[in-house]
Length: 174
Image (cartoon, rainbow, N blue to C red; front, side):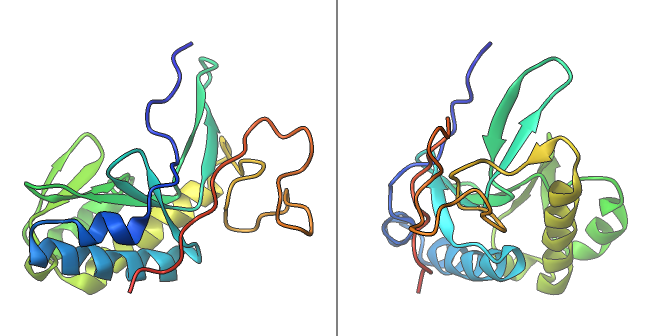
C-alpha cells in the first residue's frame, strides 16, 4: 500500500514563514499560526516542505489504508493560502458568511486574511478540529505531539516499541 508523501519534518516553522516573499502572506501566516495554535492547543510544526500543521491524527480507512495527518493545517502558497479539511458537513452556512474565497477537494483558498471574516474562519477551523478529534477512525499517533500525549513517557520520549516517532513541534512563531 502506498505511503503518505507528506510527513512531519524538522524544518523550522518560523524560518519557513520568514522566507515568504510576500509580506502580507508572511503576516497572514503568523496570524494563522497564532489562531490555529490557540484553537488546537498545539504548537506548529512542518509537514513536508510547505504545510504548517498542529497536532496529529492517525486514520485508518475501511480499505486498510492508513496514515497520519495534522489536526489542523494550512499552507501559505504563492497564489493563495490553503486551509485543509475545513469543508465538512455543516460548513455551507458559515462559508456563506466568510467573505472572498474559493474551494476545491476539501480545501479552502483565500488570497489574504483581510478578504474574510476572521470570526467565521475561526468557527470553521474550530468545528473542523472538533470533528477530526471526534472521528472514530482518527486515533492519536504514539510518540507524536498531539492534543493529550498519553503515549509519552515522563521524559517526553515515545514509549519503547512505538512504530511512529515524530519530530518535536516548533515553538510559537512571533
